[in-house]
View 1: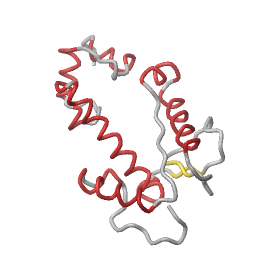
View 2: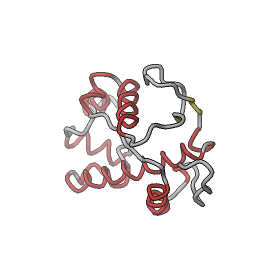
View 3: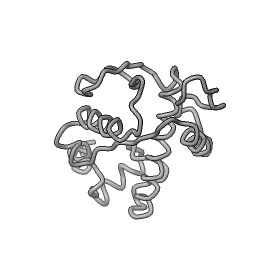
View 4: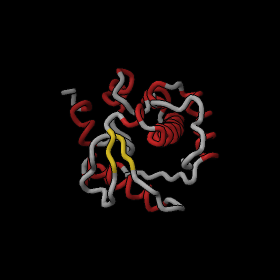
Length: 164
């Protein structure tokens, strides 16, 4: 976000905002941002690397895609040893730091859109409502229908085999 620009009203911890408010704020954030970039890691990469390393990979991808070099890199949570760039880690950052809150809102809106698209293809998993979290509906669907290519096999195996 541009230095010295006024904060966008309503930006705060994305978990405390409704989907509709996040959607509206994401438009304002994108319009006012110096740059916005997203990064992701595939299910296969998560399985091969682990969730921590895949998160660092996704962050590196997002940083490389920025159209301007950032003045500073802030991450929500603890330091990421393998990020490969100097950064400041802020535990609970989306509740404490405006820039992190903005990034979190854009990320959640993107994730929610992807999950709604998957929900149209795989309605039994409830992805339009649960965003991939293990709700009772999602767990029952895993047991009944098994995994899709969008599930993490190692994470879901116990559930499908009845141990979760």
